[in-house]
Length: 88
Image 1 (cartoon, rainbow, N blue to C red):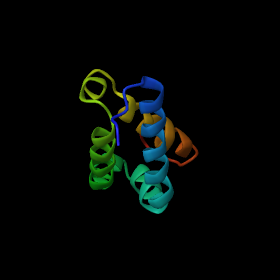
Image 2 (cartoon, one colour):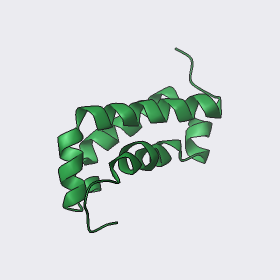
Image 3 (cartoon, helix red, strand yellow):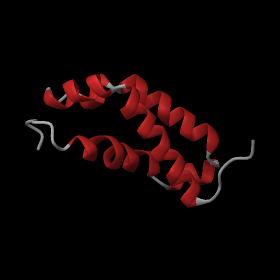
Image 4 (spheres, one colour):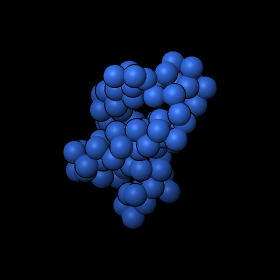
């Protein structure tokens, strides 16, 4: 499988991975947002997602973009803005 070199495709991949993380970890995400422990609680899932993203994207593109980090915020956290939390 060829590595992704187009920024648009890399962004879509990052968003798809984060969407899966959100889908399969809903309860854990909600609880961690409420307790302000999101990044600690999802450390393993986010690391696995980032590793998968890195394995599919050209190293140069991975090194000069933050698509995965943006997708974490846009896809996972923004969609949970309704959850009561001290962090917002």
